[in-house]
Amino acid sequence: MKHNFGAGPGILPHEVLKQAAEAVVDLNGIGLSLLEISHRSAEFEAVLDEAVKLVKELLEVPEGYSVLFLQGGASTQFAMVPQNLLPSTGKAAYLDSGVWASKALKEAKYFGEVDVIATSKESNYTYIPKDYTIPTDAAYFHITSNNTIYGTQLHEFPKSPIPMVADMSSDIFSRKFNVADFGLIYAGAQKNMGPAGTTLVIVKDEILGKVDRKIPSMYNYQTQIEGGSMYNTPPVFAIYVSMLTLRWLKSKGGVEAIAQENKAKSKALYTEIDRNPLFKPVCAVEDRSDMNVCFVMENPEHEKPFLKLCDERGIVGVKGHRSVGGFRASIYNALPITSVHALIDVMQEFQEKNK
Ligand SMILES: *Cc1c(COP(=O)(O)O)cnc(C)c1O
Image (cartoon, rainbow, N blue to C red; front, side):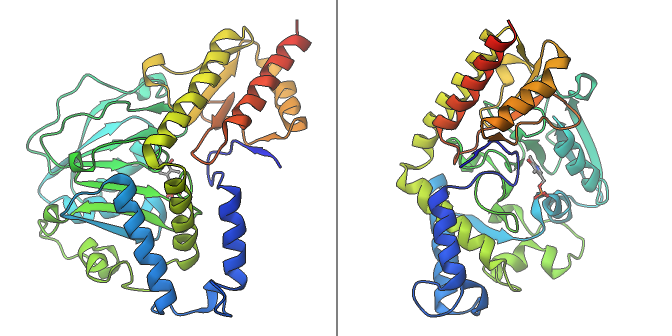
């Protein structure tokens, strides 16, 4: 088996993949595939119900919030959020902490005024901007909790006087946070929750229904809530595998237990990056992500041979995003700490070879 450090779609627990494979052939021994039964069958309704229940339980979602499994990825949420929350004469505040944040605010401009209250673009997003005031007259404040490409993460969430909206695509379920601090949370499944094909949305019901525009049914959170994520045919496979992954997370002790493991994983890797003279980090120490660990080499000519050694040792997916270069080790929930140790071993082996 490979050590899978890919950024997304990312690693899933092996036992989840095996269960999913079985269900594709025969779901729970009913003699039919998960993929060939009605989404309105009792079998699938039970899957969706359990998935919603697990989200509520694992994240301790309070009363007054709806949990949805939608399609179109996080990128569709970039547009759906302003369409539902930004009045055409109003404005929305955005924190520009990376390419995903800037793509989100670009979509918001289709629906109203956008106030970029802080950005770290001038430094290629190597840190999270911290010096800003959230305008009280904006409809909502949008943040990206973890910047997948640059390896930065908001370790403390701002206190927002207006509804806070978060793109948590790459760190949902990786650590504890208070859902009640947010108006809306969304996350494409394929980083830390399941396979590509579904997007989790957690929305506070009372922030909806306040814009004047007409919203087409599929893009309207209220239609999706009324339909229980089944206004149309939902992405049954992606929801099923997400449900299995959430079951797995619960069996591991839930979010608090996995957060401790994630901290141990990132600490081990950053310690090696800081210690090993061949490698260096790329982002501000206080903003280092526990999910995507980015690093470069002191000597750029070492990058190709290091990548080759990784490949020989079964370490895959560590090549950095083209806009940052170097390396990015994504250490999502399902990546065991033994894989992190395997990567550290290769870093040390490479150091020995290049003495
Ligand atoms: C991957 C990613 C996206 C894009 O997700 P899609 O589901 O491909 O649209 C958006 N935001 C963040 C933070 C991501 O990591």
